Amino acid sequence: MLDPLRLRLWRQDLPGRKYVEQYLRHQYRHHCRPSPIRGSYTSLETFLRLIKELGKSRLEEMEKGDLEAFIEHEQDRGLKLSTVRTRVAVVKAFFRFLMERGVLGDDVYPWRLKIKLPETLPRAMDPDDVDRLLAVEGSVRDRAMILLLLRTGMRIGELLHTKVVDVNMKEQKILIYEADKTHRGRVVFFSDDAMDALKVWLEKRDWNVAFLFYGQRGNPLTYAAARMMFVKYIEKAGLSHKGHTLHSLRHTYATALLNAGMPLECLETLLGHTSLEVTRRYARLSDKTREEEYFKAMAIIERSERDGYHQCDRELQEVLEAVQLLSSHGEELHEHP
Image (cartoon, rainbow, N blue to C red; front, top):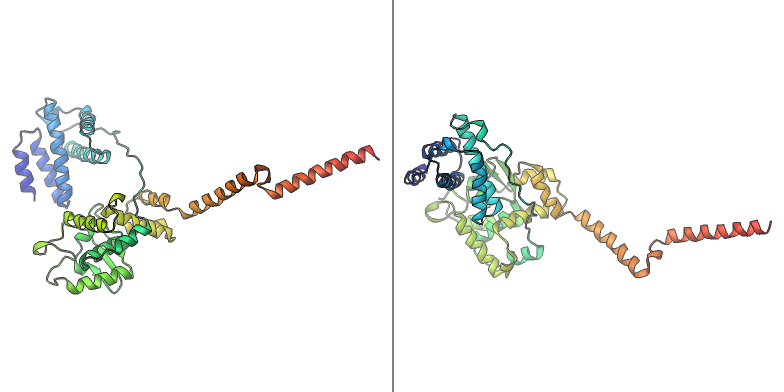
């Protein structure tokens, strides 16, 4: 898969082309998947074009401020901050690769340069939206895909690369030998309704194909095809205005399990997160205890506003009245010994 990228790279008169080719081969030898390698190429190609525009013909001429200029350049193009951060991470990894080979010095590497993203909440689907989605009539394959994403929390790329031999129907689990994003393996489990949908699909699918969900010629179903399928179902459910995506099914899975009382540490493993802090975002989204305490406190506030602030705590009012009564009796005793 490197040959098309190599041809595209060498058609352009960009500084450091040979180093980019070496870096991509380095990624390939370390078992990077095609998608991340293509992403690295896109980021580095854009960066090297900017370096050329800055009047530099060799990578050895780069300076520390060039990466800052790249960040401003990408932001000016209107890219999302998350995309800019991803591209900067690729360039920094490329810098480290060049430093290890003596092409760049330590003084060029932007050690402290980081892009902090806003800490947004995951977009989970409301239970009513889930019911409407599952009520849509469609093919047995599509229903199996949607239910597996919803009940396992798998990323769409993980599901599309799942093979039939990875599925254990008896124990209701799927083995993910290497996750697309983290390159870490894990086991996920699926519910009874997902198993029922999967059984129907297994009876109809072509058993000569290795992949669980496949496209033409037995190749894995593409992300574009899976996305088009999901959009079609969302439209039929009347939910197009909600902004739900395939990844929303993963967010919905995590939120539902936390609401059901699953510990964060257990959910972290099931989702394949590398940090508990990433999983903790769902706790902020689905903290039922905090929600219940809020409405309990708000009911007291509303009642006090309705009845009057001086009567919001009856016991305190009775104590104050008793103290006042004792005080008045004490004054009477002093006046009449």
